Amino acid sequence: MIDVILSQSVNGLVLGFLFILISIGLSIVFGLLGIVNVAHGAFFALGAYFALTLQQQFGWPAVILAPVGVGIVGMVVEVLLVRRLYGKDPLMTLVLTFALSLFIESIIRTVWGSSTQPLMPPAVFQGFIEYGPVLTTTYRAAVLGITVALLLGLWAFLSFTPYGRILRAGSRDPQMVGMLGINLPRVLTGAFGVGCMLAGAAGVLAGPLWSVTPGMSSQAIMPAFVIVTIGGLGSYGGAVIAGLLVGLTTAMTTQFYPAAAGVAMYLLMAAILLVRPRGLFGEHWEHF
Image 1 (cartoon, rainbow, N blue to C red):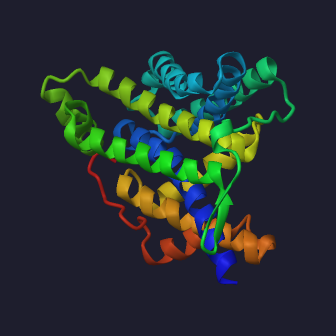
Image 2: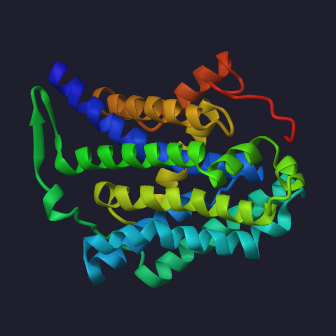
């Protein structure tokens, strides 16, 4: 029994860190732009399909460009569409991003087809790792290490770089950032691009685990919303804690009570919100 629990814990950590990458991107967009990006899952799927094409054409080293491509697409979308709705009825941004999600999924089906396509992991990450009672695939261990490295890099970027400090300050009071003479529209575009790039990176890493399909966006967006809600809207640290809780809960439920695997994270969210209505680290921010 202990072997199963430890192995499933590793799987839960892998799943949790993937969810964290997605949800932190969503949290950055909400914290700075004040919009709920329903299309975030579509950018996740787009990252997986970019990786599939790059891997087929140029090999795995080129896959590193996939998240960058998703980030560029996100910045174009922000400039052409999202920017026009700042300060307006939040329902308009929900409708826009929902329509954008459907549009991106339609493009994916047109360009790559509707069938499921396998994305094999690099040869160096194929096989299994056994460490005491823990048994997992080499690729899952690699995903765990890569996601931790990405999150540490994001933390360093937000904490120690001028642009990162601007993002953190803007998430609290974007008007104040504009009054300091900083080009706020450019900051908002960059923030939206960073959020989409994180979703794309998660899609690249999840491709070999989940298979690449147009519907994979729904596998990402709902857990992301649950994690952001549990952690607290706009809280990066809350997204990390909530992502790990959701990943472990989903993995354990899948192992021991598969019938409840689909609702486990929602029950967890309901239980936490009964105690902490604003989430674990939620705050009341003035500009909301």
